[in-house]
Amino acid sequence: MNVKIFSTIATSVLLATLALACSPIWENRLNRTAQAQEEDTELIYGEIVDASPEYIMIPVQVAGNKGLLSQDSSSEYRGKGAVPVNMVFHSLKTGQSHLLLNKKAVISQWEFLELKKEKDKPARKVLFLRLIETDTNGDEKFDWNDAAVGYLADISGKNIQRITPSNAQLSGWKYDKNRDIIFMRVMKDSDNNKKFNSQDEVNFIKVSPNNPGQGKEIINDKIQQQLKSSLK
Image (cartoon, rainbow, N blue to C red):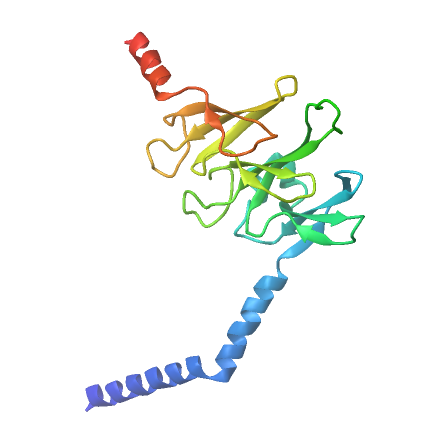
């Protein structure tokens, strides 16, 4: 008899729980929780940057978003408690504004590069970016342990293009203005373990900012094999 009573009580509790989960009250509670999480992401706008005579740029940061780079990941942001995630570009000529990125990402570094001046043409600049846009190691946040990808964009914040492999970490770059070439140092996840360490392959990539696209590797497989053979 006690077993039968216990079974009846358990069934009633289960049915009540299911009814509550399907009720408007529970649905409203879930909606309020999602709204609270959204409101917890605070937008912080940086100082206006003169991108060109026509365009200005405003960096956008967030605070309170646990899915992005943590404050402890970089001394650059530790004191600010905010993470750069996008840029607003505004045309002074047309009065129109637009975002640089249409996806979730961390802008770990950015720089305007003044390009080599071509004869009889005005000087040009491009925007160089280092983005963390994929949770490579699966720890549910974007940080310095994930892949870091290089991008180039117009000074208007349009025509953004990736110039380094998506499964690599961009660790450094240099713009050679005389040769009009961007040189970049990258580390590939060569063992496919979703991590970047001393066991992974390092290479160097070059790309022309006037004809951006996937950069070409400087050290090819043949050179790699020759180096390894010479050490044996």
